[in-house]
Length: 404
Ligand SMILES: Cc1ncc(COP(=O)(O)O)c(C=O)c1O
Image 1 (spheres, rainbow, N blue to C red):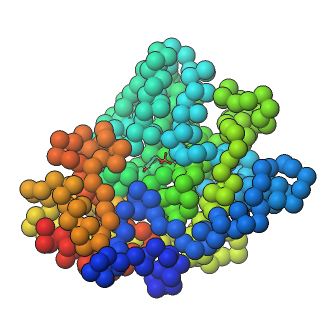
Image 2: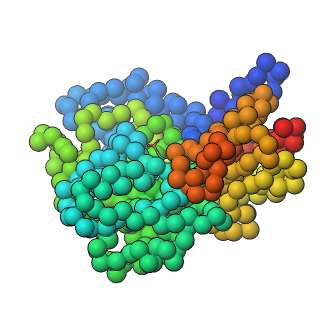
Image 3: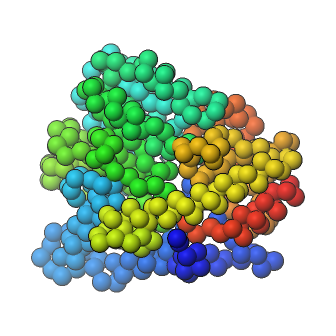
């Protein structure tokens, strides 16, 4: 079990209070989590002890090389990847997607097809949908009103011409967990690339890229207690054959082949530390086994708070929840709600008066919010549970909501 007081001590930003002395409650984790001291220190220590570019002959450059190696190693263990050379670093998930799509545009042919979903964040739709400009047909898996994808629709759209299936592991708008293993199994008999967006899934659940058998996976460390940094997993052998945009002086092999310019080394030190931070909630003989155990503990804690919040909200007169309920296993601890009369912006402003941080709108999952018929109503108010949230915070949130 997680010791919530111990966890909270790691996060200095949990101490912020408003003018009434009320402590801040962060329910905005799906937009970016708070950062623990160990990660903050790793970033600032980088500048104090190791600040340099890579591959030089002097001490700080050597240290930077070690940090970059460790980062790739820890991120690869985080994803259950084959080795550290399958991890490429980028600015954020969106930028890495645009880099990949430029490479795909050079190998996909006119009349090839791709599949995206109506549930996904635009970062996992827009870049791939831009392939339309190359004569590629775009198929979209339908989102059902329940908040789940229509898997029959997927099966009717996959065919011999499909070259890419881009799927989110979990929705940042509705908290749905998609059936990525099922889709991965179907794709074993197809030549299509299988690409996953793990951004909303990674803070809450263990990822195992070998087990899922995906070709690419994109992630962002600011959603799992790290700094703003994106990274890409590519199955060994695939990136080496893609014609990426790169300088002739860049290392031409994976993972460097898709990286451009000087990377954010300090943020890499922080992302590496964020993996160790998550692992610190578990027991085991190595980093991977610790992560496995840690995610079981994180899930128990987050699921119990999220289902409590979900049930309490459904007991309120003015609010209703959107998306799957918490009996379902396909659920991340992210709850979207709508007020009977007030728009989501109004609700968030009111919550802010109680020093509660929550986002309103579509959170770039614009299509999903449109499909749920909520676009014109200002979207939803999103309440996300993270590792540092408490039962008392859920109770305070319910009291605040019941006054709106
Ligand atoms: C599910 C999901 N995918 C992708 C992104 C984009 O990530 P980034 O900000 O790293 O480009 C986000 C950001 O909110 C997200 O929630």
